[in-house]
Structures are given as structure tokens and as C-alpha cells.
Length: 405
Image (cartoon, rainbow, N blue to C red; front, side, top):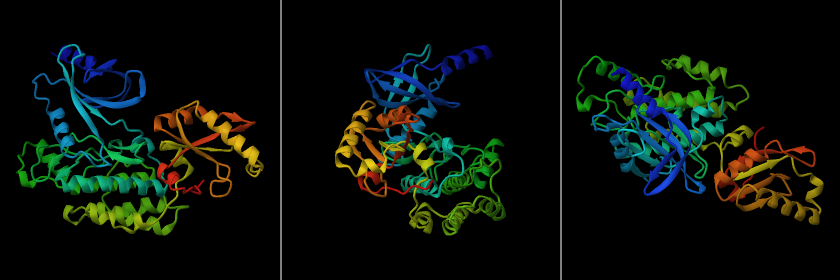
């Protein structure tokens, strides 16, 4: 039996080459993640490599219950339509596996996760992530759901929508009707969830009304934001204000004091031991921390893809004030940038902010990511190109950040 089980696991862990989805063949480009019950793949449709998506393939259930698949599908179908929640495109059954067919979700393809970004972040990025996640949780909680597994790996960046989105609703449940015994991940688990998981492990049956509430999500978000601010993966959960104050005191150098105090107070309100005393998503969004305008660090713009590329270290001031030279440069840059994808617009400001920088808006983030990859480190007229992404919303408003170096 053990050998059979191992064979089944080996078959499942081998990435499929193709999926047939709604009568069309999609090629598997890479495995994005693998868990106990499912694997996630990046796939593209036919010849159009830009038509990309993610497939979450659930491990075949020999008893045919498919609980994990049915659970996540039902939650996602119920909560579609919010910009900060991953989009479910459809569901299908994959028959290409040897043995039992597998259940799959076809999902929006997202980019880097917060776990890929964990380090001492700029306040701009912490604020951006906090607001996006709180907006998603506000919607989720109003619909009566608890995410119940909020952690850096389940918060992903969308290059095309320019925001963070929540994924993985396999442990989600309706508040007051909890059908999942073990919730949350070590390090991000609220005290009441620790207690409930312990009771479930001991075989103690829980009443429907005695389970955890939406407050567990606020605890997890508090830990995520603390890790983003400090750049430290916390081995043990924070149990006291002294611990939290110490983390802030040791990671506040070169950061403006007032915003740091506001962020600290916001996180404190999420990490109260008593669930009923924790802030709600609505009260959290009223924090003064969200009223402060921050500018991104240059590192933020390298890490977070968008459809807009910004090229630095290319244009001399002398080129900007000769109209003929300036027009030639515009034409040359457009011709060069079109080699990597469809260019919607191109801007080279003659004055600050943004003086001499080249802003290139591509039709989609796939093109801009390819351009960034191929242009970074290239030389033009003996100069090394620095290529970062740039917020599409700011670019379209004509707002050019003086980014913090």
C-alpha cells in the first residue's frame, strides 16, 4: 500500500505537459507552487503565449469526495467580482493523468507574492499592500466569509491591475458555520485558532457558534505587515507590546517617525489577544497611516511589474533642448522598444520631475516584463541601461514620482 501511495504521489508531482481546457490545448510553462492537496501551474493558450493563466490541479481523491476542490470552487464562485481577489475563469476536469481524472480551477495568472518580496520594505509598499488586503477582507467579511489562511504566500501582485490580490481559499469558511477544523498557518495563527486547532486535534467537537471569527484574519494581516516592515521572518508569533515595540525601534532608522508610529499603532490594533477587541477592516482603513502620501523606492519599481517601463541613464540634458535631436531620440527609442512588444505610448519629459527618463507604456505587462528583462544591463552610447517598472495609474495621470533612491 505504501508503494502504491508513493507511485501515486510521483505521478502527481510530475508536472503535466498539456491541459485540455474547454476544447482548447493549453501548454504548461512552469510549476508555480505545490501543496499537500494541489499544484499550481502557469499555462498559455496555443500560439498566443501572452494568453496566460494559472491552473490549480487538485490531487485525485480515491474516494471521489474532492472536498478541497469543491470547497475552494464554491467559495470562489460566491465571492467573485472584487479587484483584490483572484479571478476564477472556470472549472474543468483533466483526463490526461494516468489513473483517476483530476479536478482543476482555471485562474487569473498573478505575479510575485509578498513572500518573494519579504525584506525591509518601503512604507509606500507596506501601505499599498495593507490597503489592498484590507479592501479584499472588507468585501470577504461582508459576504460572511473568513479567509483563515492569510500569509505572505497567499497575497500576490497583479501587474495588469496594479494591486495585490488574495488567493487560496481552501480553508475559508462561513462565519458561524465553520466546517474547517484546522485553520491558518504556523506563525500567522491567531491565539483563538491555536486553541481551536488544539481542541480539534484532541478530538473535542466544537459547536457551530464556538468557532473562530473574522478577527483571525486581522491577526494574520498584522503579522504579515510586521514582517514586511521589519524584513524579518518571525519564527515565533508576537505575544506582547514590548516585543512589537522592540521590532519597530530596531527597524525605524532613516524612516519618518510619524508614519512609523501610525503603522505601529495599526498593527497593535490587529494583534490584540482578545478577538473582540481587535480592529475590523473598516476601522483599520480609517487609520492615519493611509492618509500619508508616500513615494516608492526604486527597488519597489524593480520588483513590482506593471505595463509601464521606465528607462534611466539614457538621455543627456543636451539632447532635450534641441528639437530635432529630441524628435530623433523619440523615434529611435520607440523603434527599439517595439522590438519587445506593442508600444501604446512613449514619453521623455524635458523638465523635472522625470527629466530625461524614458517612460514606455506597453499593451500588457507580459511585454513590459520581457522588455525589462532584455533591456536591463544593455549599453546605449556607452551607458548602462537601468530599467524599472512604473505605476500605470500615475503615468496616465501625468504624475511622475521623484522616487526615493
